[in-house]
Image (cartoon, rainbow, N blue to C red; front, side, top):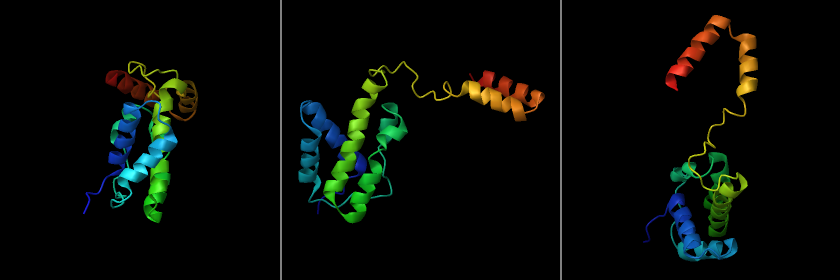
Length: 144
């Protein structure tokens, strides 16, 4: 009996195929995943994640295909699983280009506070007493 691959294992294989042949199409990677994994047991759903990808792209991007993967596992369709893996792969590959990050880890794209700081300050000042606000600001400055 073949060893049960996880979703992360399948994604890593798709990434490996892409890195080996950068000109390969997503359709061909999908076909290769189905060929390689199609006779194996379906991946478990209890760890439906690819943890190392949060360093590459925001979670909402790399998880884009996981609902399709889950549907594929539930319906026992390797084509669906492969399709979900390709969606996540495409998101991970396109994120650096679309974010103009160009894979520069020194840029803090994960700092989601920068886009909401002004609105947060305005709203907090409406309902938070001034002395409590100062205490919160002091605590925040100590952490930074």
